[in-house]
Length: 68
Image (cartoon, rainbow, N blue to C red; front, side):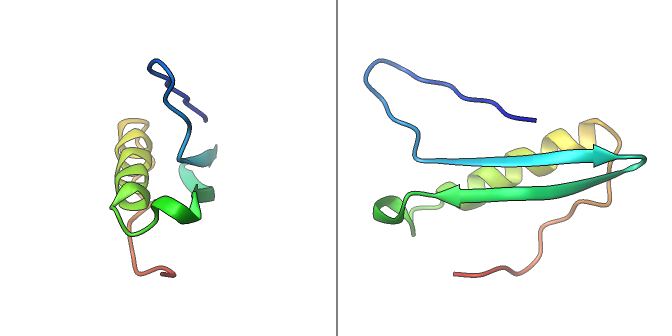
């Protein structure tokens, strides 16, 4: 699942993707440009992915501790 939104001259600063397998959702990738890290973008992307996974009744995808 992917979603890209662009407004004017804005650029993509990060992206996240998950896929569904049976009744589970698995996080495939989550990246943020190094120059904008530490601003909550990764957390916001992850929260969005979690929301979309839960909407699809794939509640096993959850936010835990990750890498900094």
